[in-house]
Image (cartoon, rainbow, N blue to C red):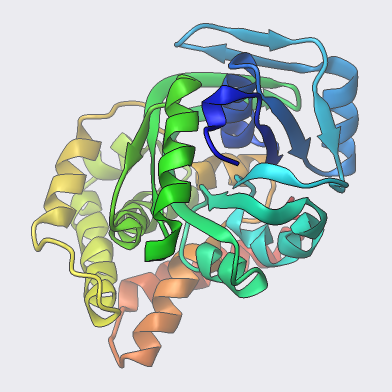
Length: 314
């Protein structure tokens, strides 16, 4: 794969939720060959009804789309957008799609996704990523995209820089707001701070994010969760600014009627992304003998909820 814009690119979207379908639709609209990897029921719906994205950037309607439960040929690009709960189980299913030049990029929540990809394919092009997007699935084939958002991507290792640059150009050309960073681990940890503070508290309370912040003690709880994660990041060699939690809180407080992916998952009865977010912070904190009592508390409660809701994650 040389210049991606010179020809249609073969793209596998691993996970046909709100994020995967929104970005997949943009890539389809740009003329690329997009296939969605999903569960049986979702594949059947996409094949029968196509895909509709009701977007603030303009609606996209595709009467037919390609979808499969198991890829059968190499893809130029694989975007992992499934729940991070599913990454370990998903990787073996991706094997037929991974060729010598395939770019694999995780746009999932939490920590550890890129490491799993690298472990499975040490010689592959691995690009880390985070996605901020206001989208939700109204039905298996209908997505509501309410907030523009952006993706941040970057090379997982130095040798992945060229792949990250090609992917950034591909996404930008398709109308996806993409930012290229030279330190994707910092970006992933920054997103984790947000997820740990707001995904967990909104899912546990059933409240909008601004309602969590408006209640007495809500802001301090979110700040304390982020400071716990920041301390663990520092022990892991990721230096985040001391005022980052305050800046995240200030920016988030300006958002009204914002929900989270974990809240939407709870409403749908799906497994919550506890382990990739709070669980990873706990495991890394234990490795460095760091106390994170609030993270432990939310993890216990969210794990209890998951125990009561046994669903397939992809």
